[in-house]
Image 1 (cartoon, rainbow, N blue to C red):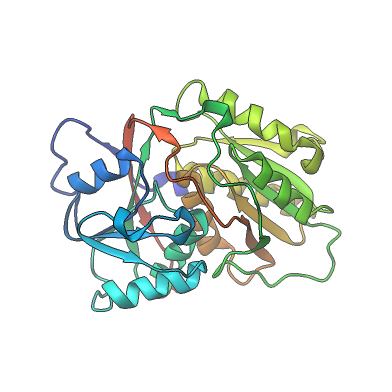
Image 2 (image 1 turned 90 degrees about the vertical axis):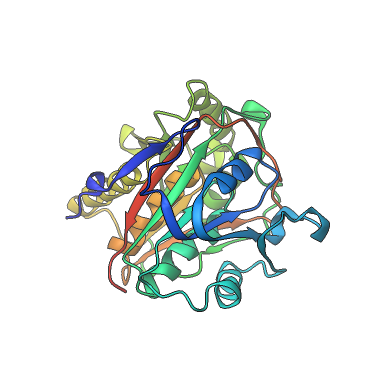
Length: 319
């Protein structure tokens, strides 16, 4: 069994120059109006640096930043990432060092990018996540417009599901967007619901804000039948998140209480990375899918300040 906690993570300084190992062939970041994204992009030391502009943020061409920018009207995570790769990185081989600033990525696009790197033979990449000082409207912060067009499997994370759904389990990484939690839970209304909350949270008050928002989806989730339906993983640690998922699934299998498994990461990008890593490492060719509530638009700015920058070294399995 893989020990995800052995994966390497560290922090990068807000004040001092970054160490020599924080240099890459390629640096990727999703463009939003958040100042923390621009600050990290400017500070990153890379041969190539690229902005990805997702259509859900609804930026005009005149809003685009300087430098290498890729924008597309494709709302498909698979099509967007493949178009970007063919446009900007077609000559890059799997020995190149790549760093992804996950902070501004829309979650399905980030997950598909992880799968894309694995399929292309990358065995290692680095990821950055910058913590905000606070969210703009605290517990009322909305990251998407919460108008859900559909709940579906994320491209590259589709499972080979069983026809018997009597032991279906849905594990939700519960974030602030209670409408997203509710829609995912309603989509799998017969499944047992398990929630993972970010604790310790990014900031001391954010856990309470998170719980207050997630509580609004309690009717759809159905309440917690037992203490085993509630788990915690640090909001800034993808590797502990993957370990918690591993332990939950192991326990379910030991009691023969798991058939189809559905994962839905709706919290921080660090936790989303943990869900994606767990899936590509342990869930391929199993009755497991990652599902997501897809929204047509996302808010361009949801946070204030930059509190801390994390760097994760992610090791991928063979394709």
